[in-house]
Amino acid sequence: MNILVSGGGTGGHIFPALSIAGEMRRRFPEANILFVGAEGRMEMEKVPAAGFEIKGLPVSGFDRKNPLKALKAAVKLIKCMHLARKIVKEFQPDIAIGVGGYASGPVLKAAQRAGVPTLLQEQNSYAGVTNKLLAKKAKCICVAYEGMERFFDKDKIVLTGNPVRRNLLECTATPQEARKAMGIDPDKKTVLIIGGSLGARTVNNAIKARLDQIAARDDVQVLWQTGKFYDEECRKALEQSGAKNVVQMAFISNMDMAYRAADLVVSRAGASSVSELQLLGKASILVPSPNVAEDHQTKNAMALVNRNAAIMVRDADAVATLVDTMLVAVDDTAKIATLSAGAAAMALPQAAEKIVDHALNIINKK
Image (cartoon, rainbow, N blue to C red; front, side, top):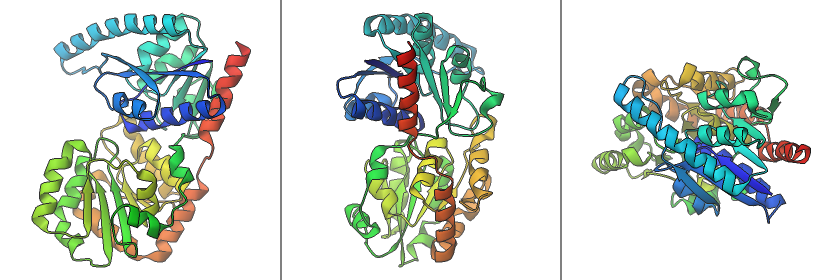
């Protein structure tokens, strides 16, 4: 089989794509799997590191407020369509799987025009522009939220959940073993702060503003993933504060151990992060990003809050209240247990397996 997978831009698109490809390879080791991503984006690094081939397209998003940039993006898109057609013609895929992101548009459109069946995976509660444009000719649309009929043909929708990195689910380390692996005290209460693969400015600013308050807590330690864009400024702030109970990193590669080490997770409310928290049964404080379509991260977060499965802090309130909320929550063992159980009850397991099942059904019908 020849399997074409396209999409990316952020970890929220890349990790589900890698999970689907990993499940396909687990079942069919001889299958040819080719990724197509956007040049200069993180998939060009993460996909080869996971052992898959990837080709890059010079695609970028449209800036409607800047006519010149929009024109340049349109010119790039024409070039990308030509390159995408060439890739499809040469690779001859049995199916093309799109996970959203810049590159998936031209690739999936080229596949559809060539008569290749397509499957879409939509991670969010509010469908992305690319997937909405591709949905009409898609054979199947795998979603993680109910009520997606407002975006897609209900006869094509399948509720599968979001795939997560397989190693997260397979980690058997105890919290103490995981903390040792992360280089921190095995016996202290631990908070993991993650701002998504690119970092979160507001979350980082909230932590920077209260490093002294965190440093005063001898019984608590923090793993702080800042994202590469904020790495230098956060490292300098930490050095100036003298806080010894905070470990700062631009990116955490061994997230299986980081999650396992944590009693409490502070995170944005992107679809992949929420799915990981649910599948791992982690207590969390969610700080939804306000810079997303239809404020869908707040909707993601409220779905958990309403089930007593998470605490939410508004982005506008984070600098003033996040650290206080975090330190109060990590001290409340009963609250942590309630949030953990609530998150686990919302999980949709085996998403990658279900998506691959539907992909194989499409291929067999072809």
